Image (cartoon, rainbow, N blue to C red; front, side):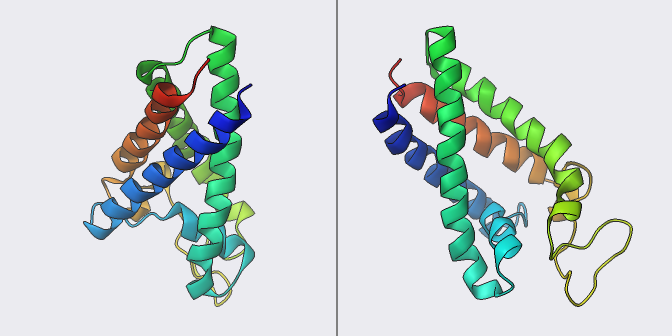
Length: 157
């Protein structure tokens, strides 16, 4: 595995993905912020949560880039179509498997069953993260497809 490529292009792909999702949030297409969600898992300080969460999101992005690299190596090729397809599968996994269990993992997130409390002020994502806006599933799919496509273009097998 080319660790320098994983490090460099994993950073680029994660930064671009985060930028796309933040842009969608600023445009009012979605209210989801993966860095904020991750940050509030480890700190109750909402001002610091985005910074801490961005660092965590970057680290997770590097780990996932290593997984993508293993797939590219196993298949003997890397290209934007393969990377984008992996990104879509990745997004579907997040939307369909991770988001439903997130309230049970997140110490500051309300659940669909119990509602908000003083210590659990974050809204649960709901089915396909639709509680964060009707365009959220599309935003997540596109951002993750771009993440994968960038890795597919830049990673050298």
